[in-house]
Amino acid sequence: MIGTASGLIASVPLAYAADDDVLSRMEQEMHRLQEAQAHVQKEQEEINRDLVVLRSEMAKHRGTTTHGATKTPLTETASARNGGVSPTTHASTAGSSHHSLLKSTQLATETETTSASRPARPVSSPTQIRDRVALDRNGRAVTDAGTGSELAVVGRRAEDVMVHFAENGVGPHPRETIGAQAAGAVGDRGVFHLGPVTIMLGGFVDMAAVLENRHVASGTFNYWQDMPYPNEPRYHTNNFEGSARYSRLSLLARGNINSEATISGFFESDFGAGAVTTDPYESNSYAFRMRQAYLAYDDNKAGWHFLGGQAWSLLTPGRIGIVARQESLPETIEASMLAGQTWSRQWQVRVVKDFMDHRLWAGFSIENPATLYDTTGFTNSNGTVSLPNGNTATIGENGVGLTNDTANFSNEIAPDLIGKLAYDPSWGHYEVEGILHFPHDRVTINHTGHNNTAIAGGAGGSLILPIIPSKLELRAAGLAGWGINRYGSVLLPDATLNAKGDPVPLFGIQAQAGLIAHPNPHIDVYGYFGTQRVGHAYFNSDGSSYGYGNPLYSNAGCLQELSSLTCSANTRGVSEATIGAWWRFFKGRFGTVEGGTQLAYARRDIWKGIGGDPHTSMSQIFFDFRYLPFQ
Image (cartoon, rainbow, N blue to C red):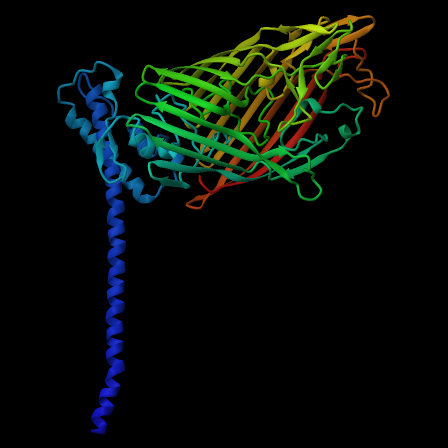
């Protein structure tokens, strides 16, 4: 009995151990089945996406074939599969996706062969040959819908483009490039869905530095008009400055209104502003600032696009169509970009219409105005200017309330009016543009006064030539006119005053050109030259000199250190030549890490006065590292 009891007691742990072993095997099998299920679901999603591409190519082929077989646009097939960009920009795509892409391309080619013998269907308009297939909201089925619906929002989400564009050999920005980052590209890794709204995150951590042979206390944001002459000790000293203040955070919220229309809101900020408490000695407390904040509405079928808020000015050159976040901006490390670059970020209300199946674009915007006055020779106190005849001109007021109390805000009677035409043929991107601006002030005489308004404006254009598509492109842009100099990076004056106190717009011209190479998906190399010039307007009264660029101003003290003589140095023009490169040396699921360097040489010329017109120059080398977690 005792032996039997002992045997029973000993068998209890063995039974429990056996049960534990069975349970463990069951859990392992369940885990294996769950992994298999997830793999099957992923493969199903890939198949559905490939089916979308295949049906899209079939629809295009059937709509465009007229006599025999036509050439299947394999690059467009790959482009649609990768979110609308060249396959070279997605070299790090997962192996399974690449395999599925090859299969869909082969199927599309086979479909071309079998479809060649079918009678062509009549085509009455470009709209009828549009892709009519898309993924449903769960990404697991195919639905018939317009080009602007799920395929645009989900299938092309990686490019962050809200409409389908005509191929021009230039195409939208590859998101990883510096030009795209400057324009405000968001990534495809920080994507969240809140009901019908998609939230996309963008931005980067930035650590930029500059070493220069002159001391200009503007960091990596060049302020060329402060480039010193030999009369200042800082002309003779080198300067090093580094900062993380241009680290950036952006957010795009976007949703479908219907199968063809989307509405979106975009916000972008960095730490480029300097608060009163900012100093480089302890906390480096640069202020959070607004770069862009706007809402947009896009109707892909009707071809209407609206934007309201703070964004890149319509005068800023673009890459394709007239679309926000597709501006053509230099790849430079310097935050001021390039002397001669046309740009501004400001409040605007913009309406754009596209024609010819997204190849011809017309845009018009009203934008926040501002006038940069030069009052050399006058006595200017808080925007109140004393005239030589005893009268007073009021051109503005220093900020109050929540505006900057050290900056003068000019009187403005109307917004700037800007129009643009953009054309995307099969090769290149071309733009022409024009602007009207209305400098405005008030002159007071013996306790009464009158208002004065001048009419200023100009015209310009830009182009991008894909010399070797996706490998080498030529960019050029320019703007010329009167009273529009603030739209250039150098911030030369827009206007001065005449003897009666009326605004006198100054003529100006700004231009830039560059070559940008992408030898492989990880390296960008660039070289630019840019220049901005301004005219002069002046008068003399009772032995005194007034206006901008007056030849009776003295430049006699510009060349001697701490000279007691005057150095008026009214800037006539600034030119800059620069070369640089970026290398994206880490890229994966964790994001992208890139490094860059840039060499720049700038020259500042002044209007000739007493003592001549000496020039000054500055050489700089920039360094930068960025981590882009969402790219």
